[in-house]
Image (cartoon, rainbow, N blue to C red; front, side):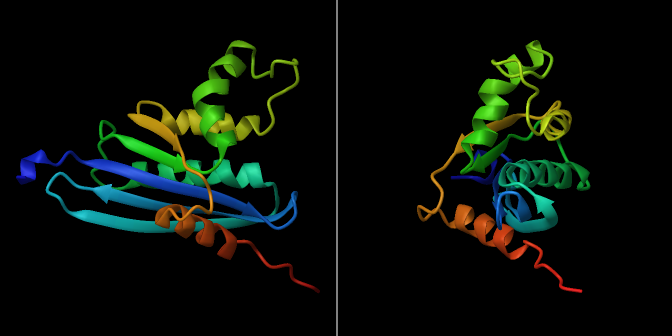
Length: 163
């Protein structure tokens, strides 16, 4: 195989975690770049909030990772990006439910406002003009990058301070 056989691509494994739901939570992302010259690069990101939900952390992981990728020097929006998540909420939400939510003015099938709407809208904005796909992976099933994203998310959960 020659170097010209390698197509640049980005794979992002994301996860969210919460201690209590709601409660303090964290998000983690493992970003894997495969450059066109066969170079590979791996970066890890994480963060947390003192009062949140697991679903908010799952969405935050995707938003923060995509924002990070787009802000890097030399980013090319035509490079395929695959989000790999163990959250059906994220994967189905973006690929299946979001188009209907938009048609119904961000309302669910039972006419209630979509939960975490501001995050869904932010994700939609960040994803604009990207060659983006989503893939679901079973959590805690031995996928090394999913396990790493889970560990990052859990490590980023803020510990309560007692004053």
